[in-house]
Length: 517
Image (cartoon, rainbow, N blue to C red):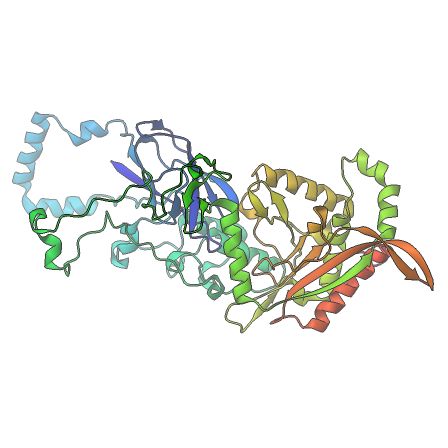
């Protein structure tokens, strides 16, 4: 029996992923949970395990393709169970005896026999070991079945959730009947249950499902969809009646034909710089490059943030001369712990303390504009520049960490981000972000908010600058800061007071100790 494995729904509004590499080829025998492919979904690389053992019949996508949630990834010919062939093809004598018994018993005997036969269990979607705990997209046939064809539910009859999600809800003590799902068709996914449990732990209501946007509905691919009854008559005409299609223009195999002008002789020798294809537009040679991976995901997030928020940036400077002395004084202890004590660790600590005084900057405004959620936890996102593009994983519960612990976590996040070892949960749940572009150079910028957060703090390059202190000109170390905030939720005065408090903690770190931050 052929089984179609579809690209699972990972939640968080992710609707597609890029196929990075296949780990199998057509004709291979695979075991259950064996890795079939690697997919990149919104900055995280996840492995796709085989839901069932068998033989790979067909790979439905090529490396580098964009695959939508619900699309078929691979078709697997399931391994036959022992004795299945014997049951499917009985011996001739047994078949004849069974046929005679059936004729003799008649329809009256068939009814009691059918009533006595236990119902076959309904197959459950596979939810096995994928990084980030992905959930398998439901089969189209499952979506199309009416409620009368499903067995009577044992619990929560008005809830649309898979068995694994129900089990997780029981484990975390979450009542699914009061939860609205953000998955396709209103289905409750694991992330919904985890968000509810986390919100309950902090005494806050769970986010409304409306914030996740409209539910996605998987549609069958054109080559598998049944012909419509209302199709025009010309669609059923024989091939001889149709006009012959013009031959396709020359182009690269497997790609849409290019309309670019032919290259000149000297341009044909140009080598691609970013792995693209050299073409020519109306002015000269160009390189056409596929926009994929982390950069494509970040581009979408940036565009979404700018389109949905009223972003404003305020700027100031902090005197971090005292922090420099602390770093030099505690350098030996930091080295013993294998930690590089950077300015960023102090800024994270100052921000978590300031967010507790100005909670609106640690909130999320729902898309309806009717409510906003004050996050009572502090997961600080750190923008990391990697070879693959910009990533923003977050430090969980940063307010509960010491500065040494924050410094250790920053080093760990940077290392794992460069190696693409951060799973989906490492990018989720952020409440406020920090970007340290000053590590590369530059003083001020207007950083873009990591939507749906409402604020982000940018750090410029620390530099020695002449400053006036008590009427005297002295040399001080100044750290440029730029705070971008969503003006729909945060007023300019509130944002400025928040930034002033961050600066106060950086210029007098003893306050963090005295306030127990």
